Length: 231
Image (tube, rainbow, N blue to C red; front, side, top):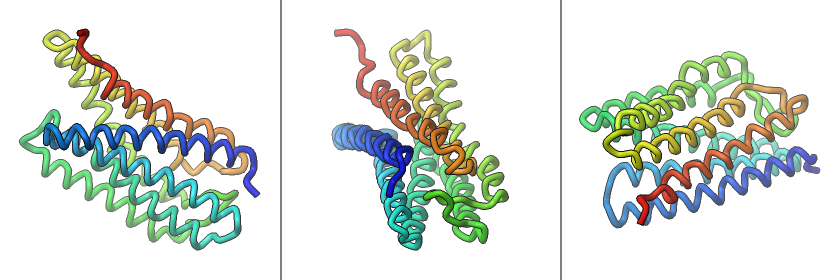
């Protein structure tokens, strides 16, 4: 039976899934109109995030009914799609600031992400504790040297761009601040997610961190679709 923190966590994640799906659909529709690579990358980021979060709910449900093998499979797919989302948002930021080096930088980011995922997949200490996947200390520490830098890159790029264009394009600057803040909020929640906290002792802390996925998604939606030039 799902405990109260689990139910709240599932509800929070489903709300975040819905917002990300809206962002993905609207971004993809924009891409069909403008054919811009950046727009497509943002749409893919949102879709990967939404599916990964949905799989987290499925993972929790299978762990709850005692089917740990199936829950672990969903967890593996979820962490993989989360990695795809990280690489896509990095690619978006590279394309925005370093378009001439966009491809090579994206490949490097993908290799770093792949290295982390391989270690995660083969982690001998991976197990289910309190309805959550717990990994070994080595994999946790590795994430702070691989995943965390990849999560911080787009935040720094958005903030850098916001400062760079604040005089010539205040609207673009404001939008970039909002997008950077949204990614930072989501990254904070994701870092807590991979930090290896005891899922029983820190159940409500984990729930609180997952609410950041909602806040971050709202900020991204606002930055992408609500910040407009006055008519």
